[in-house]
Image (cartoon, rainbow, N blue to C red; front, side, top):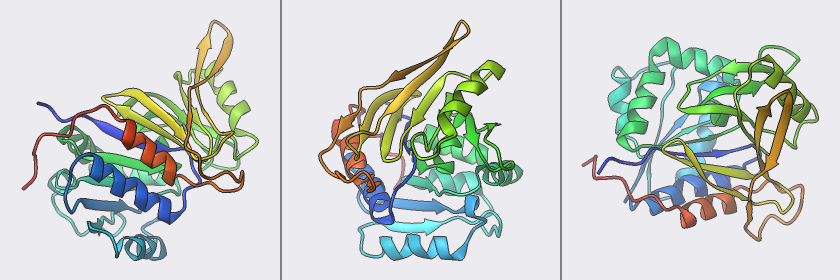
Amino acid sequence: MQPSKSLHLVGAGAQWMNRRSWMTISCMHEKIDKPRICFIPAASGDADSYTLQFYRHFASTNCRASDLELVRRKVNDLEDFACSQDVIYVGGGNAANMLAICRAHGFDKALNAALSAGTILTGLSAGSICWFQQGVTDFFGAELQPMNCLGFLLCSNCPHYDGEVARRPTYHQLFSNGMLDGYAADHGVGLHFINGILQHVVSSRPSASAYKVALRGETVMETPLKTGFLGVGTRESRDDDEAAVVAVFETAKSPPPADRKP
């Protein structure tokens, strides 16, 4: 049986505790003991403080945590390294810089190989849009602009949908300039894709949602997607993604990947 290609993405707004839960629960669902979890801090320029937070919050978990620096690269065989991981988590930051670095090192190809091998790919904000064909970013300058991404998901993505005033109107406007149909996600909303198809949408905030956005004729159609509220994070200011993670994996229908690692 071929392993499923699983991506678990968050619109934005996660705290470190919730990111840890996201990855830990994903491995529990896939029946992985002592999972290998790798943090990719490239979008922050391999900031030491960001990586230190990752290790600090994973120190007490039953996992084998690692990080991969691309700005200060030390790993020779990136494909072998990526395929040896159970979860690869891409941190937030500058998506444009991160993608440029990945492509310069050939890490985009390594990530694609890892996805095909059954490695779970996850991230939020920059770590969400990077997996799509196109995304919306503000890292080319002051204004939001479209960006070509890795194309593992053949559609577009706009995170921070309810967190930044300009996100919704800009995303809509970009469709007149060739933006692909896609998905927008509010803060605290998790999107779960299996083999390129959206399977579940869940939220830790009662009023948050995700949307299918598409151009039909000359009109941009925005369709709210059925979003499961998980009964936590009742304060609007609490962008708590932990519950979104729990629901994604509790409701996932995909079988565990075939054994692929010793």
